[in-house]
Image (cartoon, protein in one colour):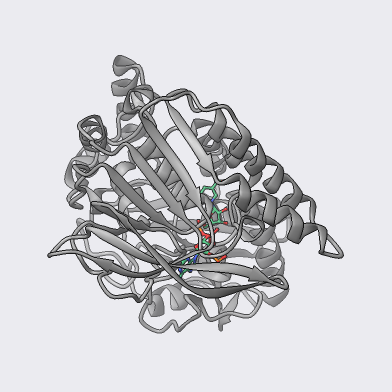
Length: 436
Ligand code: NAP
């Protein structure tokens, strides 16, 4: 019976949903042996290091990942880095199919003066910092000022702003990184301002996330009701209004009109504001914005500017994929046609389509790519797979080792009243996994 060897690089949602699609496509005469390769010593990608700690429900998808991993045709090779421990060429030679599910981990840049100042960070640094990603433990996050500015009007900007604006005690029962919780408890930040360059009708937030904001117990959330009124007028002039947009505006109207509690912590969403410059003497101290207006559905600049004094600027304007030798990047994602990269190499998830969609989006997306892969399959190779590629003694975190790490974190969590206490040190993670 033909068994095709599949290497999936990247153990995030797109990688797991791709493995699941292969598992579902198996028939008596079409079998797959799946090796999932992951750079970190831990799997789950953004479910572990991206999803906000105060959104535990979203993380329950990890149960689906563990079910996929328990199938007999699945093996995990974590702590194995593409480009360092194995090359793409080797994978291409050894496997019938290579699927790059490597995501998009580099924060996009504004390209404005002052962006490189201290305490001007990207969400691509700040989010993994509070989520205990081993590479971001040492990110310098200074929370000593009164006001933080978050640039971008998407769900990542909202996650970042919420984490800064809620009472840190609300994070006690979560899996937020211990180092971040300590810092957040000492934070002086009282006002967080999210700045979107276009209007409320163009915001990339989604309605469920917006609807959660008025429920925050210790934070007042503000949107200028005039900006919402304007947006409603613009929507009324549109021929066709999508349901998602209607829901978004409704949720923002509720926020604008919601009675404020008079608590010290404030989160404001400000629209029609394009950042022009971050000013400061060695560190971010002020952001200068240009005011925009909407004319005939288009956002145009006015001659007016305003500035916000701040000690922390976080940019959340999307992500780009990192480059691997032999793979080209176009518009921040791996160059591909419907997931096909070249020869037997494919891309899925954010690496394929850019940083769009929620976790579930990856399911249908991975299914489509796996269908294309199956159409393109040739005779299976007779090759060794990954085993011959790794140096002897390489400390692979396999599924069993990961389960040890997972159990250890969950047990620590039980004692602390949290879902888990994440280990942040790379070497200790490996030790936890491979110790007896
Ligand atoms: P996003 O949804 O694409 O939002 C990016 C925001 O950045 C947009 O408001 C965009 O404005 C703005 N932006 C881009 N370039 C800019 C610039 N040069 N200056 C100022 N603003 C700029 O990206 P994201 O927030 O990173 O989220 C990525 C994906 O993950 C999204 O699909 C999101 O829904 C998903 N996600 C979901 C959840 C959840 O379900 N809870 C949580 C986090 C992330 P323009 O529209 O004007 O370009």
